[in-house]
Length: 194
Length: 194
Image (cartoon, rainbow over all chains, first blue to last red; front, side, top):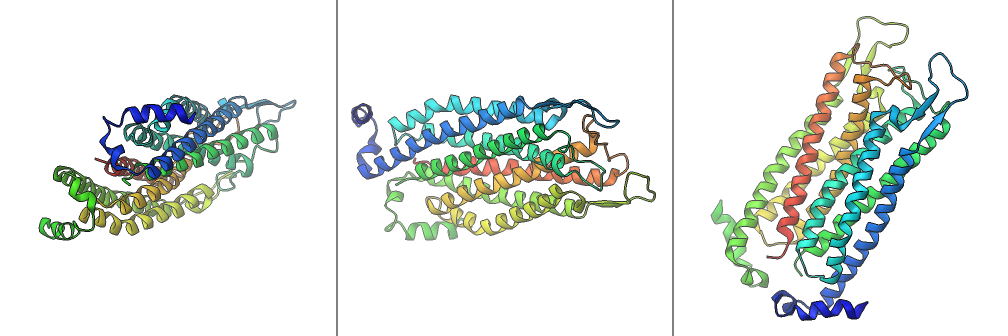
């Protein structure tokens, strides 16, 4: 793989004057950051897809009913969980579409365009992923603990499987949030002049 | 003010070799970005402090009581709102402490250190502000609309003032989130090589 990477870079030396001035050590360091960026993106895709799928399949029907509780709980019951599924699917879609730009950054470590494009869109989708994860966490907390002052009872005694599944989805979304923060910090480090 | 800004830059030309190679047009553009960064930070401080203060003072005592509802609702009643107050106060504190670094970026538009420091910490506090704003928004939505399937009743009919105040705090926190995204995008644009 190292030979195929070296070929386009050396053939573009005439076009890119910056490469001539930069020391080769800096190029290798930036290439390492770009490869780590690509690997982290794969992990974030898995976390985001897992979160969307886990939340989207959360559905529990009780074998009994009381005066207060209905038979079924699914992610459709909560607007916040619907928002979560849509948002995490969007984030996973963006991450898949961002992979080619990450590959470009591996092949040409000194190119500024792809990194700048990725850091701006990463920031937007970090906000989206954090918002959906945090709002779903607030609802999951309520489902576990309830709230005395507003007389909202905890539903996790009845819907145990539903609560476990939604909690897992929230944890998975926070994994993708942490990876997004790492991606932005790494892109910022690689963007600076050397 | 422009004279005081020019003095340290010209006295450091011998130390910074990059400044010699850079065109002067790029320096003026970067200085404009740094000044805008400072102004946006002031706006974000106002939004974050306003959000924390509005949420922290939300308190409503009803003149009557029913079998189900207690007399009083305050931000203490909801763990999410407590988290919101603490987080937005932290964000406001960070923004105040970041102002000196923003001033350094104005005085020395080509310095990489302050911008890199700011973009990394901005990303972390963007995540914090988004998480608190989104989780509080999820609770405010429940307070307004309730949830049929889990039998959580809307409390905004009783606690109208409380709901209005918490909704305002959430809106104010989202203003600070938008400003954070703008700050990160502007820092990324200014970090790239010219």
